[in-house]
Image (tube, rainbow, N blue to C red; front, side):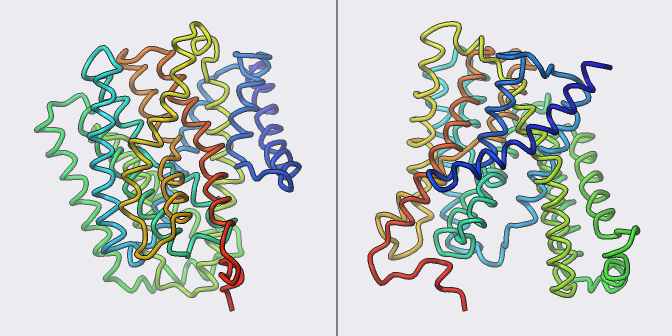
Length: 400
C-alpha cells in the first residue's frame, strides 16, 4: 500500500510537471504535453529510477483515461463537416494503409497474427492526441484541420473495428456478426437521439450545470460506462464503445443552448485532460519496457524503421484526404498529421503481448515509434503551416 501511495503522489506530480516543462520550451519548440508525460513516466518508472512501480490500480485508472481519450475523440468529430469527400477519401486511405501495414507486418513478423498486430498499429492516427494540438494552434476549423479530423476518425475507428474482428477470440464470421450487431444497436441509438428534442435532458442539464447535481457530467459517465461495458460483454474492444459514446453524447446535447454546451465541453476537457488522460500517458511511460528495447541493436533499430513505416504506410495514403487546391505545404502537413499514432499502438501492442503474439521488444519498438511520431510529426506539420506566403492570413487572423 505504501508503494501505491508513493506512486499515486508521483503520478500526480508528473501530471503537473508535464505542462510546466512544455511551457518552458514553448518559445523554442512546441512539444505536445503527452510527450513529456510519457518521457517522465519512463524516467520515474522501472526502466530508469524505479520510483513508480506498475500497479493494478494505476493500470485501471489508465484504462479509464484511454476510454476518456476516445470519448473525447468521438465527441469532437463534427460528422456534418467531414462527411462526403473528406470522410470518403480518408476511409479509402485507411484501407490502403491497413493493407500496406499487414503486408509490411508479414515481412517483419514470424506469424500472420503478429503481422496483423503490426499492420493495425501502423494504420492508426492519434485523433485524440491531435485534436488538442489542432485546437491550440487554431487549425481545427481550417480545411487542413477538417481533413486531419476525417483522417483521425478513420484512423481510430477503423483500427478499433479491425481489433474487434481479429482479436475478439471468435471466428471471423461470428465476430463480424457481433460487430455488426453492436454497430446497428449504437447506430439506432444515435439516430433516435438525433430525432428527439431532449427537452427534459436539456432542462436538467441547465438546472444542475453549476450545482452539485452535475447532471450533464453524470449522464456522460453513464453513457460512457454503458457502451464500454456493452462492447466488453460482446467481446469487442472497449475503445469502440468509448468512441461510440462520444458520438452519442454529441448528438444528444446538440440542441442544448450554446452557452450550456460550451460549459459542458469545458467540464469534459477538465475530466479528460486534467485528470484521466495524463494518467494514461504517464502509465504508458511507466509500463514501457526500455530494457527489452535496448537488449539488442536489431530491436533498437526497429524504432526508426517503424517510424519510417508510419510515414510511408499511414502518411502517404493520408494525402488522398487533402482539400482541393491545397498547397504542397498543406499536403506535407496532412501527411505528417496522418502518420501520428500512439493510443491505438499502445492498445494493440498490449493485446499482442497478452496473447503472446509479439515480443516485448517489438511492442516497445512500436510504442517508441508512436511516441516519436507524436513528438516530431505534429511539430513538423505545424511548422509547414506557419510557412505561408506573404498575404495569406493565419487561422487566427481569419476570425472576425
